[in-house]
Image 1 (cartoon, rainbow, N blue to C red):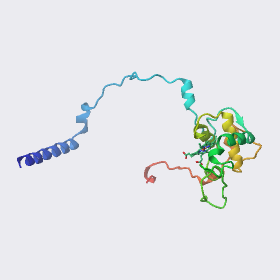
Image 2 (cartoon, rainbow, N blue to C red; image 1 turned 90 degrees about the vertical axis):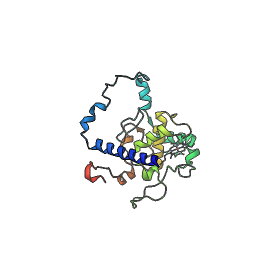
Image 3 (cartoon, rainbow, N blue to C red; image 1 turned 120 degrees about the vertical axis):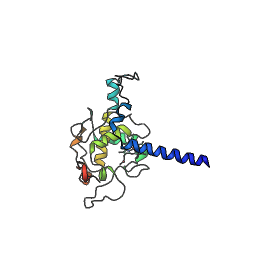
Image 4 (cartoon, rainbow, N blue to C red; image 1 turned 120 degrees about the horizontal axis):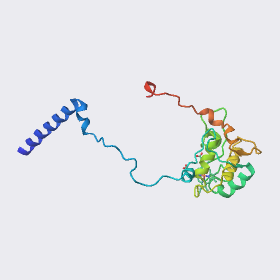
Length: 197
Ligand code: HEC
């Protein structure tokens, strides 16, 4: 039994010294933090080259920032889509087997019916460029030229009844496309504090 008693005594001492520390002045412990100055470098790796950063810096923003030079048309896009996308998204963009890309926006509904598509859900056309450029074709991402991405983007916007078949897509025209679903999105304009629950 003595060992159980010893255990209890040690526990009481342990809790007591812990509380004591909590109640004491924090400045007492200031000297125990590591205040040594960090070195300018840890000697690991090397500085990234501008071209290496550029190859990763591919994001395109809703206002079009980040869109590359080049352009594409609906007709070119149709041919590329059939060759590189239709096998997974269907010839008309509706029949799969993977994600449905074409689908109407129902003006009368605030809540869209059925599967989400470019036409009924995507708030910005520029995101379409960004996503196709970085992630598609699913089995070979990063292989499309900017002309090809502009063209497929144009084709998919056309198939979703968002643009005319004659509009040429480039860094200037793409950000001007207003997506039908944009109005369904509400910007989070909370500034912090008590309104955040
Ligand atoms: C090998 C099959 C395959 C091919 C080829 C393919 N995709 Fe996809 N795609 C997918 C899959 C799977 C998803 C869903 C990915 C996910 O949710 O992470 C997808 C998702 C997408 C989406 C997003 C749909 C949404 O609303 O979420 C777009 C847009 C898209 N693909 C466009 C294309 C385009 C354009 C091409 C041709 C350049 C292409 N895909 C080729 C399989 C494919």
